[in-house]
Amino acid sequence: MTLCPCLLAVPLLITQLPAQTIFAGFALHGCAQPAELLTMAPASSGAGVDFHLGPTAAPVVLVVGASTSPTILGIGPFPLLPCVLLPAPDLLLLAAPGPGPALTLPVPAGTPPLDLWVQGVVVAPTGLLTTHAFTIHVS
Image (cartoon, rainbow, N blue to C red; front, side):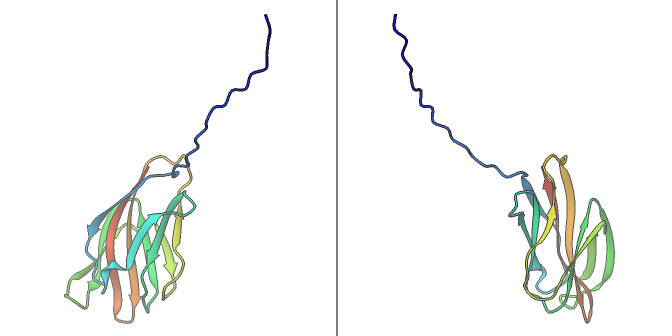
């Protein structure tokens, strides 16, 4: 009986999956024009959510809450709808006027499933105006 060294080749496939899955849903119309100033996507780092704000001449405060707490901030300029802030103000992120980098909300891997409410508030010379509000589920 002869023993020989044998070579065994096994293919290996490695796939990188995002750290979290993010589902976003529309929750409430905003009164700012345009109200579509706020968009979101999974963070480029793979751990969290990136919020992108469209070009605006006024600063925008991004309001993130773990629950809702509807608050009327005033009446919008057009079409005269009430400006309702939907999320509870648990976390506030300030964005400078004009286009800029994304605001990132880091969510570490291993965080239990998380439901958030998000809305932008434009600090305009005419008053506080709201963007559309969204609900986000991170799992």
